[in-house]
Image 1 (cartoon, rainbow, N blue to C red):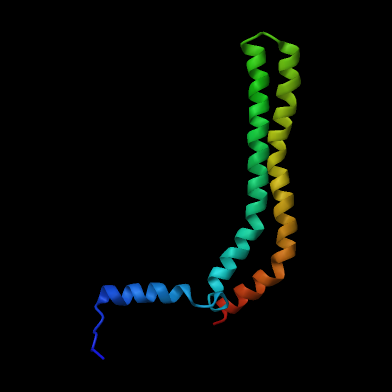
Image 2: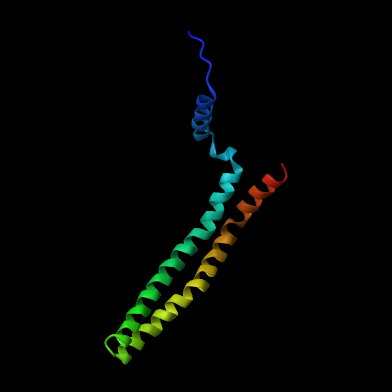
Length: 117
């Protein structure tokens, strides 16, 4: 068996590989960040989709008015599009609030264990 002295670069690489095999339970901060993302991500995605759809519909209605001079159809598209885009923020708040209730206990438990170490 040969004697191998790992240089600093090899030691860093070994530590990087080792971190991949550490149990997720050992890294409470990573768990806390993942739970926080679980709370916020669905609301952000749904609100983003609604905002984009609303803006596109409203833009189509505005194009009908300005380019083709069709005021009635343009307003019929623009107003619902505006409403959908404006509803994105309250929908985000509702989804996030319900998910906060769902994950509050676990997030508080993890954050308490991190703060009282």
